[in-house]
Image 1 (cartoon, rainbow, N blue to C red):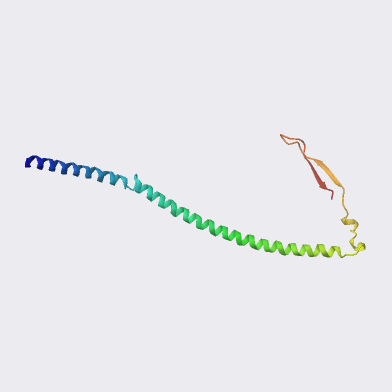
Image 2: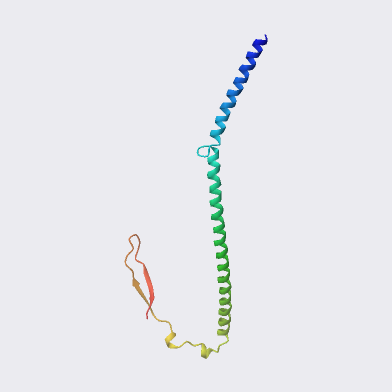
Length: 130
């Protein structure tokens, strides 16, 4: 009886050892840096680094654009204020000075026919006569 128990115990130990060997091989393939999950993790890590660099570059570009747009907006507001003052001062001029000289009078408009577009009607353009 002891002999049968020892044989079963050795068979169980061999079975457990074989199972551990199979699991070790699967785990090594799982963590393989070229084909397994380890490789996928390495690739994803590299992509995260690239995306981080790209994000930092995009943030710096956006910041520079924001600063530039802020300066342009400030300049535009200043010009708008000056234009408002000029228009307001034009209302204060007497009628005799507000008459435009003959050289600044409206000129006749001349119509020139453009060549026909391949898929549409003839387009006309108005050009101020010089």
